[in-house]
Image (cartoon, rainbow, N blue to C red; front, side, top):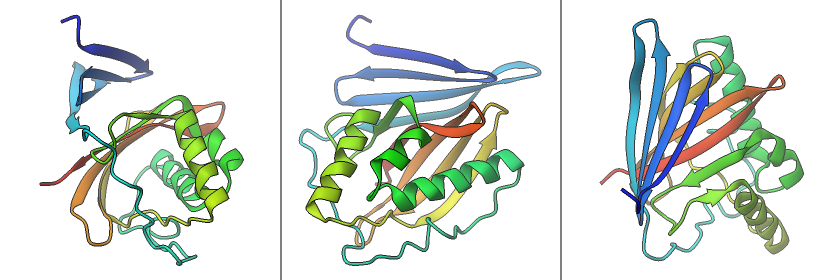
Length: 194
């Protein structure tokens, strides 16, 4: 279908396939097992017609306990533990230091969610962080309600349930790849739970 934007990336024993058509964004994550490739995730996001205004979650709060310091589950493998440590550093510093944030995000990174009218690239996210810093807006990440992780060797996927204050919960799937000894986030893909 010529009007479907198809993107495919293989990362060791996992593959990410996106098929986007207008506001409909679809992601599939595959893992290579002994018996062959297996579908691990199918997730859809419908982008809004017009981006919602940014929410300053925790405005005026300087401390971020969950997810920056503590989370309500225990990662099982050493790779999962390293990924969570990387994510917590990134989340804690994202609103303050774009230079420290940048190496934790892969060049092909995208953030796709039900609050925006388009997917955000790495450059978009860095611009967003710099604007927040200049305006003095502080945004505390929404708490992690629950999560499940999948360790594929060179990549780790986390499917989390998160909830902003006074808002509906959503599923946020993230994946990291290990490059040059450090974990970098490949994507954040979230779907509001209706």
